[in-house]
Image (cartoon, rainbow, N blue to C red; front, side, top):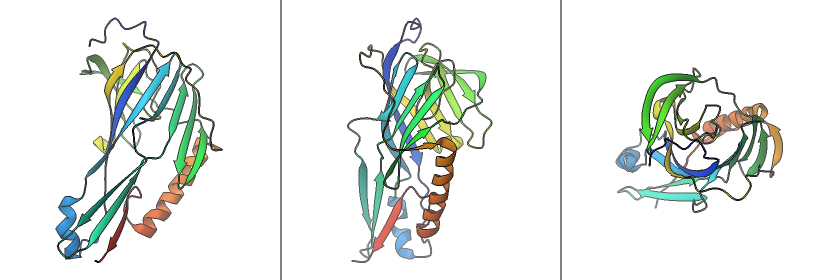
Length: 239
């Protein structure tokens, strides 16, 4: 499908696939861990959907997405590693005209309603590529996460996946930390949306800066207690 001639688009849904590379810290001095190292997953993938109508957009899990996924790996000596991946039910709402952002975030069993988000200083380059039939332009930021976005002006929804917005068109792809986290559109449905896009309202209210500091502190505590990156808990036991 060509992206040209779509300037009248006012609403639709975009499905994205999020892929995060996993950094698993194991006791490599233990030969039993060495036997199963090659069986461990190197990435985690989830599906999300962005619903947009006019200036409003809402990014959420796909309804079919399970909240958790468990995986067990066993070596020759009977040692089992159980891995649990959680997909929290989170929402991100953005109103482009008002530049208003509201996040419903889940963290350590609690739900927070976070107001505000990072304001990105995009630099639009002349580089282009095609995504799902739409001509997209590359934009970058100079921050530490090396954010790269690809957006299409053919869909005038000034939004994108998760917290990423502020470009003159819909963002169809995001890459962070040289691909350690990748968000890519996999399907675009421009069927008009008849229902309203509503901001989330559940959770303890908190501003974005305070929430980021709280999360950073808790993740450091988890890393010190369990090791690793904090996004995977590894439990071992002898059988």
